[in-house]
Amino acid sequence: MSYSRENPEVSASGEDRVNAMRGYKATLSNPNTSKEAKEHAQDVLNNELGGNKPRQDLYDVRGRNKEPNRVAGGLKAAQTNPRVKEQGKKSSAEKLDQMPQE
Image 1 (cartoon, rainbow, N blue to C red):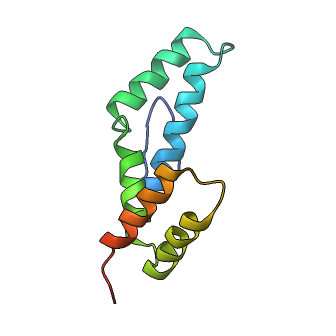
Image 2 (cartoon, rainbow, N blue to C red):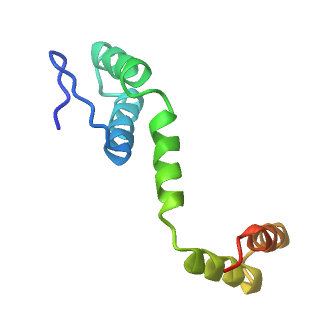
């Protein structure tokens, strides 16, 4: 995959797009980056990478690929973990109740 000023190419892969977005955001926050480079990075983020949409796409894809038994196990573990706050324990119990039963 290449990202150049002459021919910007953005992969359709959600993960690749999120990684590209991270790189451009790093460019924006780097004090050693030129004004022109920051303008280019902002332009690519706004017009080619879809703002925060790639990140949401990635979360959606990862959520669909999770194994229900592992998710349920994590939620049960959170309820007994002494480092989890009461709000988190309550939230995990609610999510566990909403999961489809097999």
